Amino acid sequence: MKLILEKLYPTVYGILGGLIFFFFFRHTQLSASLNNLIITVVTISATAVGFLATIMSIFFTLTDKPIIKKLKGVGIYQQIIKYIRSAIIWAFVVCIFSAALFLFGSDNSWFTYLLTIWIFCIVTCIFACYRFISIFYKILTGN
Image (cartoon, rainbow, N blue to C red; front, side, top):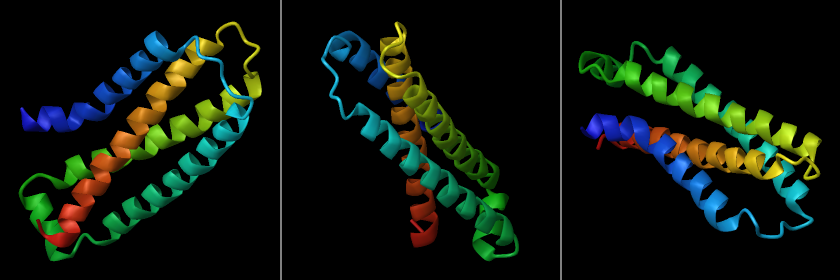
């Protein structure tokens, strides 16, 4: 049960974030600085992709280290790699979706729906990154 929750909680929180925006904030007047926020999100998510990809490559180079052998021995290594991959993919999706949202602009009749999906992607990405970082921290500290 714990593993199922660990796998699903980024997506569940993403859905909740999107639904909260859609049902409670979709009629809120958006600030003129939304484009600045979108550009900032593109920058942060692109940086996250690079950071996480670097960590993933480091993981692959540590195959002979005792901690990696131990993780492989107990069957956790592949799951950690999947979590890194998931965080990278979500950060990449946020980056691409943010750029598309910036290009289409708020004049689009579908903008509220696109913004809802954007918020879903951002929240899911945040929790996917958090999931990996918290596990990586536990590995580094031995907890």
